[in-house]
Every structure is written in structure tokens, then in C-alpha cells.
Length: 209
Image 1 (tube, rainbow, N blue to C red):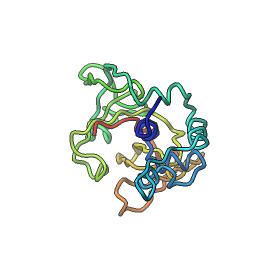
Image 2 (image 1 turned 120 degrees about the horizontal axis):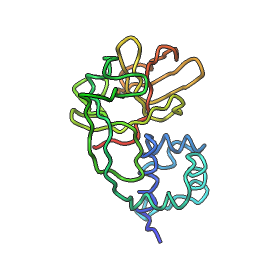
Image 3 (image 1 turned 90 degrees about the vertical axis):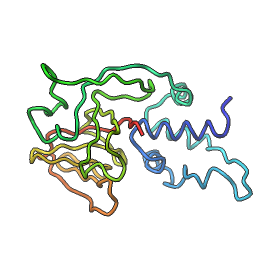
Image 4 (image 1 turned 45 degrees about the vertical axis):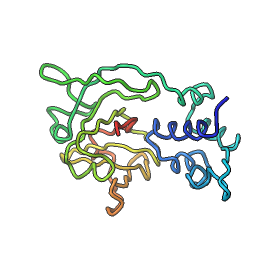
């Protein structure tokens, strides 16, 4: 039987594996955005509050997660994987980073990394000092990404443009012809792109922080 802390940890980890904040996960499930806030996990007198069975059911349905997987991610299995590795500097060079991600072949680099089995990614990205990663990610952090042009609102993504620029942020809107992304820096405005301007788009599945 899971403890109160383990139930909340499972919700937090589910959000993390989907590249979401707990608030974004709640919204995706059709719940109030504050449902999973830290302040909601204890009563005024300090007693623990449990997530409702309804909220858990809605989260599992919205993310396509089985109860078995949900309970299992509180004690994730670690696996070692080898993934193609890109750096921030590669993102604007089509010779090194194509529409499918890092270009592999002679001279390409891979990363051997031990991660939770619940973390999915098809390539790794080492964060540099590029402004697009601030303030959420620091130089040297490793991100695991999965190409996903249908990323949903609330999910964190990397979008590489044909204009040799890129943005890292949270999807606000993803329509057939247009994508809106909020940069990681909350001081910056939401950026809107025509889909045809995007060379590569990937969901951030895991970060080494």
C-alpha cells in the first residue's frame, strides 16, 4: 500500500515523465490547475490530504497510463541506454541536426546514460549556454527528447526552425497550421510559428536536474 507521500510522488513523477508541471497535468486531465499544488497536500492543521480517486482516474485517462504503470513509477526501474547526443550548438546546423534529430554516422557522438525505465527519449541533448534554455535548464544538463509534432498544451518542447534558430518552452496551442510556444523565461512573450517554419519539434521527456 502506498503512503500519502508516495501517492503525491507518483503524480509528480507522472507529470515529469510527460514533460509537464503538476498544474499542467491537472489541466490536461480537466481538473482545476491548483489540484496538485503543494499547498493542497496538507490541511491547515498539517494533516495529510490524499489525492481523490476521481482525480487519479482522470489523470490516468488523460495520459493513457495504466494503474500498474502509475503505481510502478513510484519505484522506477533503472536502465542503461545509449542515445545519439546533440548539443545546443548543433541545433542551428542542418548538417548536424536534421528534421529527425541529431544526424548520425561517422563522427557522431552517443551518450550512455542510466535513467528511469519510465523516461522515454530517442536522443539526448546537452544544454549549453544558449539563452533559450534559461532559466529552467543550466549548462551541462542533459535532456532526453522524443520527436513529437502533436505535443499537447502544457508539454515542454524543443522547436528547431528553418531560420536556423530554436526555442525551448511550453506548448500553448498546437493547431494544424500554427504552433504557439511560451519560452522558458516568463518575461518573454509567447511565440507563434507557422508549422511550415518548424524543421524539427520534440517533446522533452526527461531532464538530468
